[in-house]
Image (cartoon, rainbow, N blue to C red; front, side, top):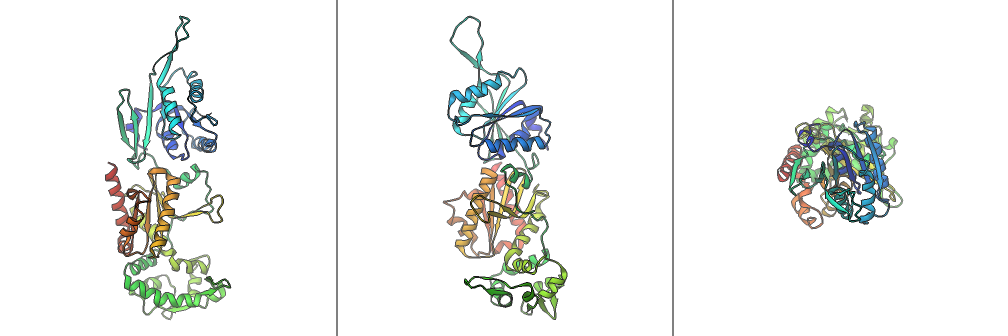
Length: 435
């Protein structure tokens, strides 16, 4: 972690205002506190659980901190007197060291009253006067994390603001850590390795062309579903039993040569036909149904994961990527799922994948991913939709009045064959905009 530019602004006592999203507080605690320093987590009744969880995580990380203290404002987050009293009680016990306030989190009222309390110091007089006098406090630093430009902003004594870029190499936040900060325990272990990467690339190339894509659905895949699917009493369809699936055998003669070669490389063929009995023998999937689901559309997530891995080193993503993040949500049966996601520094990138070209479904997936990504990663989060639309720009434009256009990207069929480059170029473009 390279923090040389921030070293001049590290403090011994850092007050953090805890809001709904703990990520900015975590970043500040990691970057702005000297060794053997103390962090004060200023929270309300509503954000107690967030503050308590952050306290636990920072202690577990052994950050060479002297202490992590909770300061409760109860339900008085807008009460100037109460806020001043609670913070002043702590300040009176501090006899040395540099004091800091990072006011990224919390309400506007909390920020204003906390700022004022820390900015002014009461002058102690021995003349018996009851008139209180104040002066500007010395050795204090005010900071704010700017999500638009990924910068730590430092307020100077002259009222000016210095900005220091938080680069991806400054602080890495692992994806699992991000979920932990939000007190979310994933119901699965996300995959870091794609299944059948060569076959998924062949699928991507097939789907990039409208003609071959239509042939796939009207020919091979139609026959595959005819043999492999069953209709339930309620009219919906599902994959047949393992015994029935073992009998599925579909000719590949009309598939593109790249697809045929990929199937052969995986040893999935018997007599020039895709045989699920042969797929079973390879142990490529725990269940035959899983392979059917892969061929039904999950191949795109595996392909996207492989494309992200290609740019991980160059774009400072490193190993902070994964696929299939199943997130439990109160009040829902299945919760929510990120198809593919990665963190770059402390910034979350969420990718929603769909082989559909239906505009309404594409917009729905983009909107849902955007909302969840913002909840997890705050204003810094970015979202990508990868679909099979022939006109991805219009999908982005249509939803533009609801979502921030600068924070979303939509890639369609034309982008599939060179997806890693398209994602990398978009990231570079976002870097330039924030420079």
